Image (cartoon, rainbow, N blue to C red; front, side, top):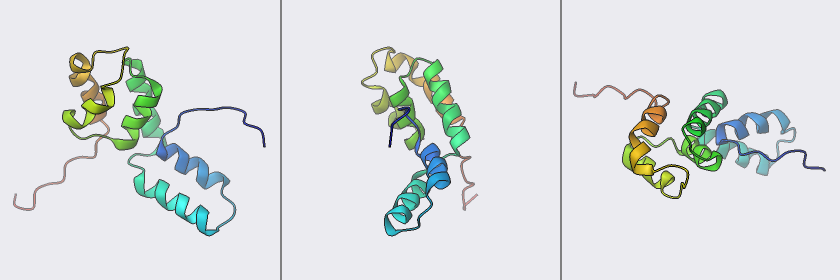
Length: 114
């Protein structure tokens, strides 16, 4: 087998690709598919859109992929992902970057108590 290309992909994209190539249904394949399905937070298309938006704002591809995989729901959850970014100042860009992530968060569920 020859590696043709290396590319950072999200869990959602891996799930989509794995679903296409996995022909055998052995135990290991089932575990991999279960993991990918369980931890996919967005569709493959939406996760790639999020990665591309974050990269256009100066976030590195590996960090953008990690953010898309985790989908932090608060600024405080987003900040650790940006701590090692050297191309941007995390504190200055935090609001702008979180507004990008926020567009991809699922809508908040209505409170049971009203």
